[in-house]
Image (cartoon, rainbow, N blue to C red; front, side):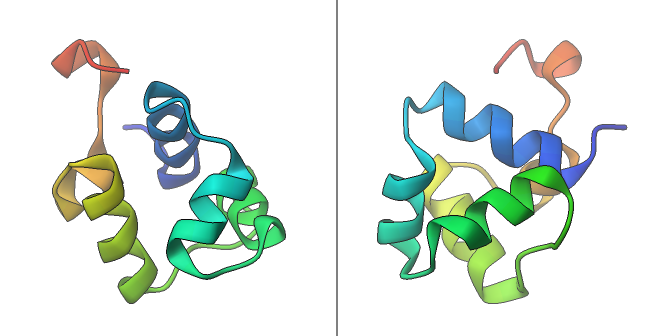
Length: 73
């Protein structure tokens, strides 16, 4: 199973967004996005919901996104 941090990175790249753009959209710092993507920290539930909306996926897909299974990302 893919880690949340990997999913966040892959989904951001899939949507052609920078960490700065994601941070601005969510109202957090770029450093926060970088820490989520590196696995140093995890986003809270509110930010997970905002990320899922931004990337047009469900919360379940945000956490369990599997590129091999879906062919996306």
